[in-house]
Image (cartoon, rainbow, N blue to C red; front, side, top):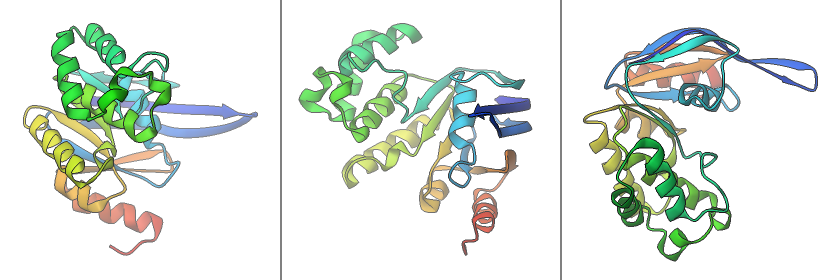
Length: 220
């Protein structure tokens, strides 16, 4: 379970104040896979970073009853001068996971070939996402933060990513960001919509998609 209590995040840019998350109180139940929707710039990535602990809230707090992944698809936690393998080993040590087991899992899953032994700065954005997804899925978190990374790669790789994600969801929950309604319906059972800094939770993913489409003026 993840609970947000009066959560607010404010940014100041060139003297201007922007409220990204405004006094949000909400709960993501244990074991639920929740699709997170919102227009571009609505605060989806900010919320993910807050839950992961990568950003401090301006006010309020976040409570959780289990381990939470870093935002999958976000390579900011990796060092650009280290290789994919070295970054994988570093993350394994942080989370107390068997180093070589995780390296073997990521090498096999991410399909990076020789690039796995090259510095992260040489990676494309898609390669970084595949590394991030592989590292995260190789660690048994209680709650995963996923940013549309299962859309990376060719059809075979996407199918493999989806299958792995669904397998992990048998024993975990997730907050899943995607612009694909089909992917959300396939991978999520609940929904959450961010609009004007406010977060609304829906027990039905279709209801959340319909609300988001209405917000952006798109027919279902």
